[in-house]
Structures are given as structure tokens and as C-alpha cells.
Length: 132
Image (cartoon, rainbow, N blue to C red; front, side, top):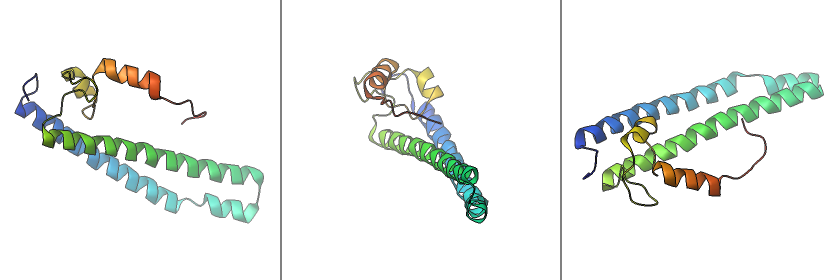
């Protein structure tokens, strides 16, 4: 790394990403366990009340949204590990400029500099309606 990141800093980011990856995997595991233990669907089947059905559906949707969010972050972390391996970590995927160290501290999986990420979000974020 010829810019602001030295090998020690990259290793610190690698350790931070490993810790976050472990945490996310545990959160996914806990969410799946929680889903297995929840009896919302069974309650809805027994009572067959429209509100119970809606509540059961909501809880399933919330659990799936949590898992989806965590899986997306895991994908970003895996991509950061690949960039570390090939020497491109810390450089913007869009413009090639070094990513500010403060941005990497806030989001060690960042693949774009602040300006390119802002532009990407303005042009690629879709209005998908309700979000959690």
C-alpha cells in the first residue's frame, strides 16, 4: 500500500473485519434460533384471527430483513478481504483514489471514497417503498 495505509493498519482493519464477521454470523444464528423458537405461525393457525396472521407475517418479515441486512454486510466484508489480498484495499473502486483513513475506520469494508459513494447512492439507490 503506497498511500496512507501501512501493513500494520491493514492488519488492524483485517482484525476489525474478522471480529465484525464473527459478530454478524452469531447474530444470524441467533435470529434463526429465535425464529425457530417463536410460535407466531402456530398461534395464527390455532386462532385464525386476521390480526394474528398479520403479526406472524410481520415477525417473519422482520427476521428475514435482519438476516438479509447481516448477509449484505458479510458480503461487503468478504469483498474487503479480497481487496486486501490483491493489494487494492484502501483504494476507491470507482476512481482509484485512496479512501480516507477516517472513512475506513468508520466502515472498514468501504470500497469507494466518500465522493464516489455519495454519487453511487444518488444514482443507484432505488425507492423500494417501506423499509425497516
